[in-house]
Amino acid sequence: MDEDVVLGGGCHCGYVRYEIRALPAKAFYCHCRICQRLTGSPAMTLAQVPISEFSYVAGKPSVYRSSDHGERRFCPRCGSQLDYRRSLDPQTVEFTIATLDDPAQVAPMAHLFTENRIPWFDTMDQLPRRRRLTE
Image 1 (cartoon, rainbow, N blue to C red):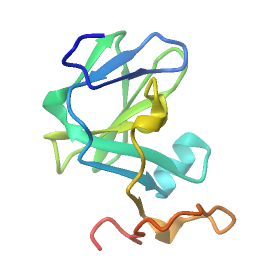
Image 2 (image 1 turned 90 degrees about the horizontal axis):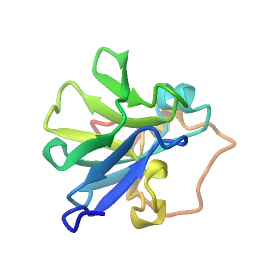
Image 3 (image 1 turned 135 degrees about the horizontal axis):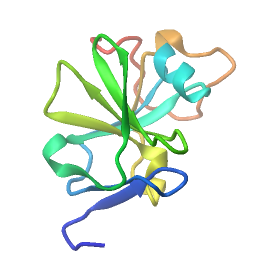
Image 4 (image 1 turned 30 degrees about the vertical axis):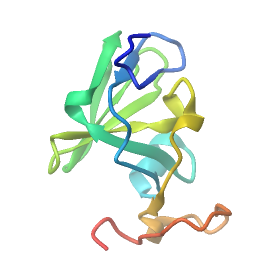
């Protein structure tokens, strides 16, 4: 791996790879219904970096516009979701923490959209919880 690369990751099948040259400014569990439906799980973990510090280095991800406020990139072969980009914040990208080569390197700092948290799912942490993004 290049010495400027801080984090590396990719999809399940290995077709798409990415590199990140900065430590995340934010990392969080997202409990929104869109993330739940796209992953089939109670929450997704994401971390945010400047888009200028994130690059795809192998393969070409497909793009899905999941809402009027954002789009997601995923592997066209295995379907792994790799990133989320907000229309209102085009200078950042949120990548899926679990697709890192070593996901233990980035720990969530908060829970977002807890108004949609599925009641039978709860983590045993004391991280801040926000019902909505704007709280």
